[in-house]
Image (cartoon, rainbow, N blue to C red; front, side):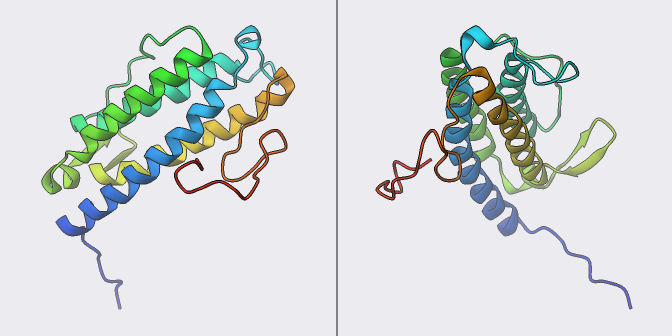
Length: 180
């Protein structure tokens, strides 16, 4: 007996898109805090000679999140290097918030037909556009986790991400609108 084949319906892809865009918007606030915590004077820090510098990793997170969301909205991935980004951590965090929100708004505007359209990802994947939202989420969280481990060795503080940290403890007094 063969397994049933699942098909993506227009209702499912729009609901999944809305759920993922909402989640990515919340994740963006956590990522912004981590980007802003990179000390500008320590941007060349790397924990290992084979690792990226903190600045390379911060720029990678910010630029690829934006490029990936734009690629989903465009129906094609064209990631040719990283775009020009600001030169300080505070400016990068603000650029990221603005540009990623803009790109997510583009994804939010896709029709069910556009969400169902397959997009080739450099010959590795050929998935419906909507399915790349999970990949974007995982990629961003993965690299944010890497960067957050750089913060204390650079003399910075690790912000709360999914709850308090030693440097930014959860007090239990946060409201849903202030927690990020």
